[in-house]
Image (cartoon, rainbow over all chains, first blue to last red; front, side, top):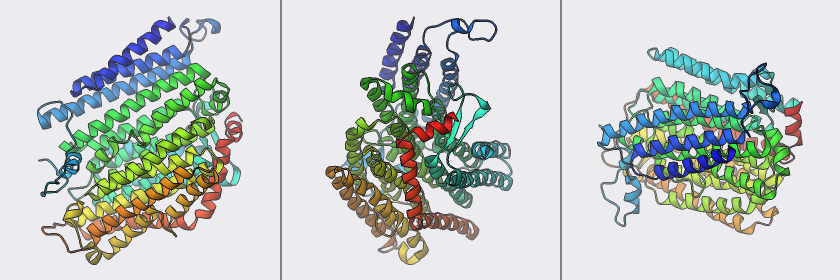
Length: 130
Length: 493
C-alpha cells in the first residue's frame, strides 16, 4: 500500500516536472496540478499504513489511520486548487495580451546582454502597454 | 498577552475584508486599512516589550496540545523581527495612499486590502511554531503577492509574474513534500518537537532534511542560483508593491531558514551555506552594476544582501547567527526606503532609467538626502545601521577563521558602494535629461509620500542609534535558537 503510494508520488513528480519545463503555459499549469497531487499523496503516505476512518466512537483508536496528515493534505488540496485557478486566469490574460500562451523572454535582460546596447534605451519592461 | 499575539494576525485580515467590501468608499477603505495595519503594528511592539520583560510567549490556538494543534511562539527572534516587518508595511501603505492618484500607483481598491492579507501572512510566518502552518503562511503571503504583482494586467507584469508564480509555486510544492518527509521521519511538524527529534535522526536523514529545506527557503530568499525570478519580476510592479516585496518577502525566507536550521542544529551544512552565501553576494552585486534602471539595480542588491544573512547563518556560531539577525533587522527598512525613493524619482521625472535622468540633487535636495542615507547604509558605511550589521557578520566570520568568505563579503561591499554611486551620478548629478515629464501629483499627495519616506529613513536612523541594545537582544535570540531548550520549554509549558 505504502510502496504503491510512494511509487505514485515519484511518477507524478516526474511527469509534473517534465510538464513545467515546457514553454506553453497550459502544460505548466497541468504540471503543477500533478506536482500538487504528488505532494498531497506524499503527505498521506507519511501518515503510515491506512486503517479505519478516524472518527471518535466509531473506530477503535488502535485501528484508526492517522488523521493529522489527512488534515494537512486537505489544507494543501484547497491551496493548490485555488492556485491552479489563479494560474489559469494569468494564462488567459497572457493569451489576451499576446495571442498565444508561450512564456516570453525578458527584454531588458536581452538588451543588457547584447554587445551594443540599443540607443533608444528605456527599460522596455517598464512601458505600460496600451 | 495571548490576545496581543492573535491580534497581529487577525486585525489585518479583518481590515482586508472590510476594505474589499468598501471598494467604492476610498476614504473609509483607507481608514480601515491603516487601522488594521496600525493595530497589528502596535500589537507587535507590545509583544516586543512583553518578551523583553518576561521572556518568550507561546499561545496554543484552541488549547490543543503542541503535537496536534497550532502553536504561536513569540520568542526573542520573532519579537524582534515582527515590529520591523509590520512597521514597514504600515509606512508603505501611507506612501501608497499618497501615490494613488498617479498613473504609476497600484490600484488602491485591491492594493490596500491585499496588503492586509500579506501582513497577516507575514505575522503568521514569523510567529508560527510548526512547519505546516509556516507553509500556509508562505502561501498566504505568496497568493497576495501574486495578485499584487499582476493585478494591473500589463504585459511586462504578466510575463514576469508568470516566472515569479512558477518559481515560487515550485518551491511551495517542494516545501509540502519536505513536510511529508519530516512527518514520516519524526512523526511531528511542531518546531519545538522537531528541535528535539531531528538531531536524533541518522546523519543521512538529518542532512537530507536540512538540504531540502535549504533549497525550499533559499528559493523564497532568492539565493544563488535560485534568484533569477527576482530581478526580473520586482521592477515591473508598482513602486509601493516592490518596496514591500523587497523589504519583506525574501527576508521571510531567510527568517524561516535561520529559525529552522539553527533550531534543528544543521551545523554540518555550514560549508555549503557559506559557499552559496559568497557566490550570492558577488553575483548580486555584479548583476546590479550591469543595470541601467534604479529599480533593477536595487532588485539585484536584494539578492546580494541575502548573501550576508546566509553568511551569518552559515557560520553556525552564536555570533554569526546574531549577526544575521541584526543584518535582517537593518536590511528590511533600508531596502524598503530605497525603493520608495525610487518611486519618488519616477514620480518626478517619469522614469527610473539612469540614462534618462539627472540633476535631481539641485532640483530636489530633500529627495537626494532621503536617498543618500539609506544608500550609504546599504553599502555599509559608518555610522549607519549597515555598518554595524556588516561589522557583526564579518567579525563573526573572522572569529570562525573563515577568511575566504570574509574577503568575498568585503569585495561585495565595495561593489555595492560602486553601484550606489552609479545611481547617485545618474540620477542626482548632471543636467536634467531632455523630455522629462513629471507625474501630475498634488501637493497633499507629495507631502504624504515624502512624509512616509521620511518616517522610514528616521526608522533606519533609529536602528543605527539603537544598534547596541538591538545587537544584545539579537545575541540573546541567537543563543536561544542555538540552544533550543528555552524554545522547547516555552512551547511545552
